[in-house]
Length: 246
Image 1 (cartoon, rainbow, N blue to C red):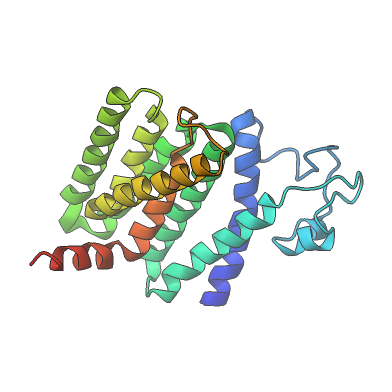
Image 2: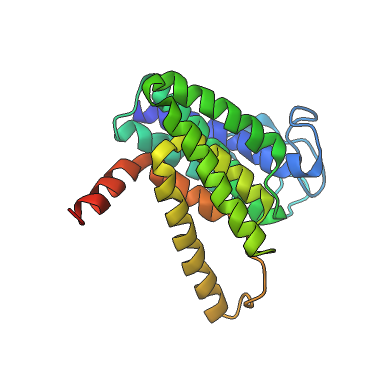
């Protein structure tokens, strides 16, 4: 199962690269086939193998010899790891399918927001609706938990967006709908970790002189990181935290 998860993750990661590159530009995800982002030359199938293809061409286009971003193998490797983790933690059946889908969507959102500072509605809104339906189908007795988690997370970030214009965008609010829909009560962990990661990275970038205090830093990647941790270890984190005060 770990091998299957790794291979499937790498393949999905290859498709996510297409989504990350084309969707913000309004291009079709299907046609034309994979091509060099610099010269537009079609890529041979054996150069398009997840992870291996980039290594075979040594990170350069086989035609124009211009560098191909290391983001491509990074996304494929990250997706493979994210597909392996739920399996090693005991997830199986439709539960692991939901977790794989959620993690894949988080990766796409994070990299798009990082590059373009947008969280596309065409991804996050359908994903929130589908995620809510899937979560309720898997745990029908706790249907209210996913509805409340989704609503409360979105309202919380919306209030922050109104209080702190420019610091929080409506894309982050819509992303919170997705997070709560899938995570339920553990969205608390996701939001907390998102702010923690964002704060630490922001301080580090300012100290290194790479960002100013008024520069906007995309928050989607940090929410994605917090959501991934909450999905995989949220129950353990929340239980540990609560037992500290009892």
